[in-house]
Length: 118
Image 1 (cartoon, one colour):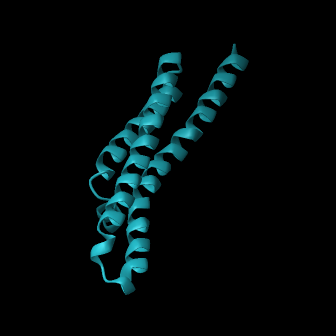
Image 2 (cartoon, one colour; image 1 turned 90 degrees about the horizontal axis):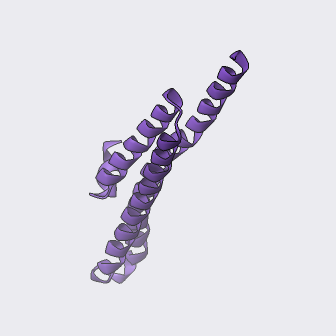
């Protein structure tokens, strides 16, 4: 896991922060359903996805910027390694997004249960 995080580079930090906030907002929406918390969940989910995409794009750009300095025989393997490492940012963004995407269904079940009890 440490290697995964180190390979992604500095862009992993904001992605991790936004991902944590996204899941926290989703949990808050489950515990205290309100329209404001849903908007916060959507906003932090968007920030998480965009941060992961930005990190991926920056990593791919860096890979191709320095690719010409590598001997011609190794360029393909270095390019694929750089793209693989760059995709770690996107993977890190998608993990909390999947968790956060499941949380509204829990909130809906809780709301339906409350409505049925009344």
